[in-house]
Image 1 (tube, one colour):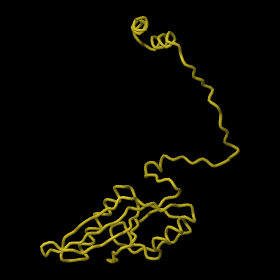
Image 2 (cartoon, one colour):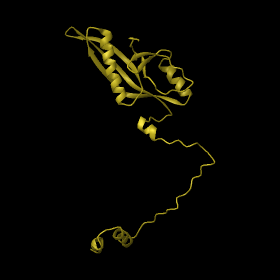
Image 3 (tube, one colour):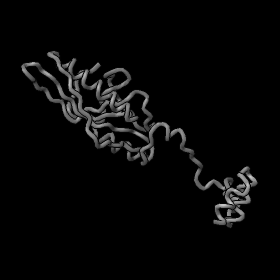
Length: 181
């Protein structure tokens, strides 16, 4: 288990789908998350782009602060808070942008800043529920024919609309009285 969190560290959720051609090496960091070892930020983005996948960058910076005299424990606590925020955004990666040690009234604290990132096939960001609803049809399959709908809708005239409404259970004469006025 690594405790080295610094600017540029990329944490990825275990089980994140990636292209078969991309071999990611990660060290376990926290429950269900690992720190990438073999690729830096640019290398990961380059490899994903080659295969048609996207490494999304979420603009809002996430910050977490933890107090404590034990620096490693404080960093871990702050990163845990950031991971919770990234999960709530339905993202599967994060990039550490800053780790700052400070003190207030001689009590040390750590502030960790990060950006949520997300690895996904395609160029449109889809949250997990949207991904499940996406239906992919094979492109240019000659067996699939698109048929025109046989139902044509034409606008109804006012009298026809009232009659149709009354036929469906509307109160007779009620709408007609309003139209006549």
